[in-house]
Amino acid sequence: MKTLTPPILGALVLTFVAQQASAAIALDRTRVVYNGGEKSVSLNISNENKSLPYLAQGWLEDVQGNKITSPLTVLPPVQRVEPGAKSQVKVQATPAVNSLPQDRETLFYFNLREIPPRSTKPNTLQIALQTRIKLFYRPAPIRLDNTQAAEGDWVEKVTLTRQGDRFVVSNPTPYFLTIVEGAPSVKGKPVGFNPVMVSPKDSATIEASAAAFGNTPVLTYVNDYGGRPQIQFSCGGTTCNGKRVQDKK
Image 1 (cartoon, rainbow, N blue to C red):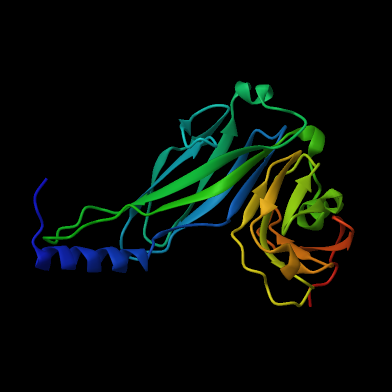
Image 2: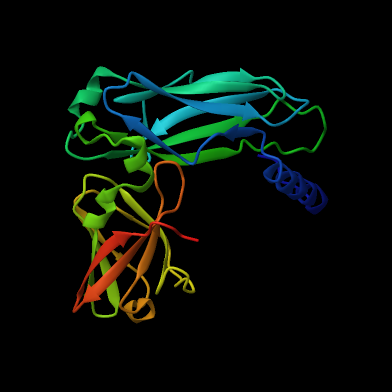
C-alpha cells in the first residue's frame, strides 16, 4: 500500500466527507418485517444521483454479523441502478425458514451497499457507503394486522420493574421491542439513555436513573413503519404497568 503525503491525504478526507453528504442509493424504509407465509418482501431503492449509475449490493446477516443466504436470501445480490432511476430488492425465503422459531420473531440485518462508478480523476478515494437495518422474521402464528403493527395492544403487556436506581423492561411478548426515548410524562423532558432493544420473552435494563422517570414513566418505541408510539406506565411499588398513549399531540 502506498504512503499518502499530507496534501493528498487532506484531499482524500475532503472527498470522503463530500461523498458522505451525497449518498446515492436510497432505501425506502428503516426496518423490514418479513411475515411468515409470504414468498418474499420487496424493498424499493432509488439512485438519487442524476448523472451517474451506481451498483447496489444487498445481503443479509445474522445477529452475530455473519453473511447468510439461508433461511432468507437477497435477490438480486447486485444490480445496476441508472441515474435517477428506481428499482427493487427482494428478500426471499428458502425452505429452511420453516426451522425458525414459530412462537417469536427472529432478528436479521439487511445491508445495502452503494458502489460508485470508477473515477477518472487522480488522487480520488471512492467510498462504498452502506446502510444496515433490522429485519424481523415474524412467523405466521403471531402475524399482526396493519393497526396492530402501528400501535398494537401487545405493548401493554410490557412491564417495568425498579431495581435500585434502574428500570428493567420485561417483554413477555413474541415481538422485539426497541425503546428509543423516555421521559417522566408524555410531554416531559427526555431522560438521556442509549436505545434499548428487548428480545421476545426477555428483559433489558434502561441505563438511566429511575428517579428521573418518576412514577409515570413514558417510553417511546419504534413500530413496524418507523413510527414512534408511546407507552405510559403507572408505578405501584417497584412494578409499573403500561398503557398506549392514544394521542401524542
